[in-house]
Image 1 (cartoon, rainbow, N blue to C red):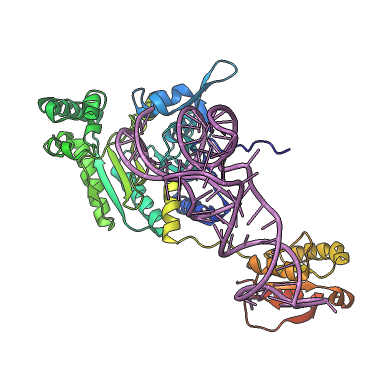
Image 2 (image 1 turned 180 degrees about the horizontal axis):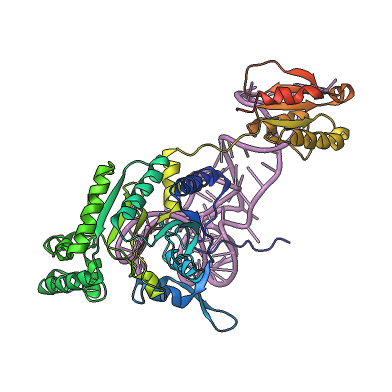
Length: 425
RNA sequence: GUGGGCGUAGCUCAGUUAGGUAGAGCUCCGGAUUGUGGCUCCGGUGGUCGUGGGUUCAAGUCCCAUCGCUCACCCCA
């Protein structure tokens, strides 16, 4: 009696073995480069109190209003599957005293959850690598973080990326700009579409993002955020730009670039691919100097980024830059069923003696022909054949599956020497 | 949340127009080669046609619902 098959939950994907090399490449590259810049790994819970996100991200954001996986715990607490990583990282750094008289740089990686309609590059469970640097107020950390992100993306071998940069200024700057924007759009209310009217008072900056071509003229004539920055924000941004120029990092200033989370202010940046359809942002971040205080700490400047791993993996797969999965050095083939018992022990002795050795056995029986076929498919460089003749003489036959070499029969004691020649394969 | 496209063998797909109880290629298994992979040839395994209802003498095919995939809007990494 076969039970009804169960399918996955919508938007919750599986990473299959074929995608393994690309995922490992992306994750290993992030880890390596982040650690080179002094970022220390931190592991954070997937569930936090709902209030953490509603306070940090903003009550009126789409994420908090309609995308969170929120549930009531058995003791009545409202808990939420994290929709992003920064809030939890700040909570942990603050709660554990990491911010006390220190300027920690932290990174983390893991699944995030948002109840959105899935599409290319957007899933309900998705994975991010995040990096957060606390306690440094100046543009130097902004520049270094951006250069670091560029280095990672270059190391992944992804091309056709552009870096967009902007400053959101202070909260007061944005307040004045917001008022000016509303005034502008209200003066041209007849040119707005339904979405724009709906957002005009809740999130007027978002109106600038509209993809509706009919809105292009009214958006083009809208006030520019850059004109509303105070002297300090402007000086910070100018220095950042000079640092990037000097380091040879190209970028485009985009005064329309904004963020969907309320805690951002000052520098914001975004790496965008042209090859991902509508969800082209692969890595984005910015300053959030007010967040630590919002969560109950002392005012602490901070900046960070988050990278979407599914999107990067997709680009890495298209670019073909991930190293292939490693293939076995050798496959040990058993010539007769009565040899299985001590051949398995022989394999263990070889693995003991040669810790680097990737040795597989085509287990489960089958003819020697079948075992050799499986050995070949495994990608093994050589097949080690142990049949009745070899067992009687305490030898093994080494058959080269990739190189044009004759097979040889050698004493077991000679095997480490023979196999060592394969180590660089 | 809104709209479009799609679910047939492990994979890629035909079959849906005009309802008549399922096909191909690849994969996999076996043989040709009584101890030797890859190429070739021969043979074979494998599907309650996403799921649940309904119409019908008869449903992969028509209708309804539902789940999943996918693309865009929206939103975002």
